[in-house]
Image (cartoon, rainbow, N blue to C red; front, side, top):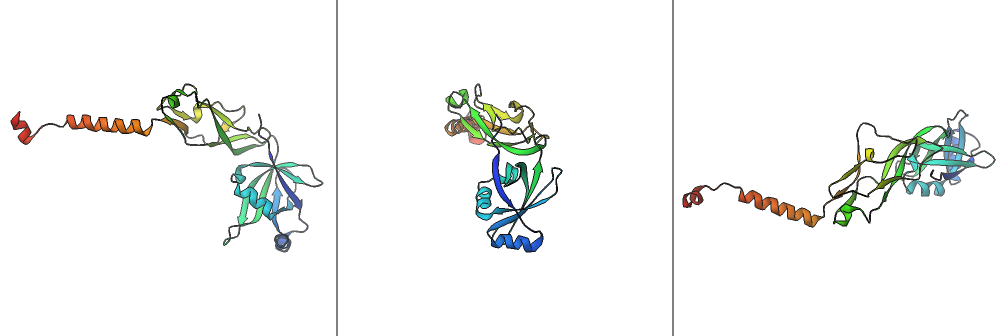
Length: 218
């Protein structure tokens, strides 16, 4: 199932240049520009508090949005830059790029783990260690999946789950292609690891050769 694209509300900004941008900020807006997609660039304003809330949720730069401007058709956009105040670290300008539904974009997709309760490794006391709770994929802008699924059925203690072990949605490919990166693994519980360490230490002590007085006594 494709993910629901989030709306991003904006208004058309009258005028261009620094003067119009300063006026927008005084009015409580963040000025911005929308470009690409075979259309002319357009100056916009986004309410400051509204944008700040979205930015603080995280992942804004890698999230596809449905730009809504009254009187215009909605358009898919992705953020390509946010300028911030050097002192307050608050947004002062935003750049958005238009995308067609057939455009391919790199975007972070959440990872969902199935069958954790019945996972053999977990039932034996193993611990699911999640290395990546989201994975960057290259997907079609018009068909972004809600999540990717990792099935833990049959996964034992010591097993590692890499991106190559996951069945990705049709048309999706990993953004990282130069290595088979790890998503999660099942590690042994600490108590078991401690016992193994103690056993190893005892074996090592038993294997130390006798010397000096001990050798003489023998």
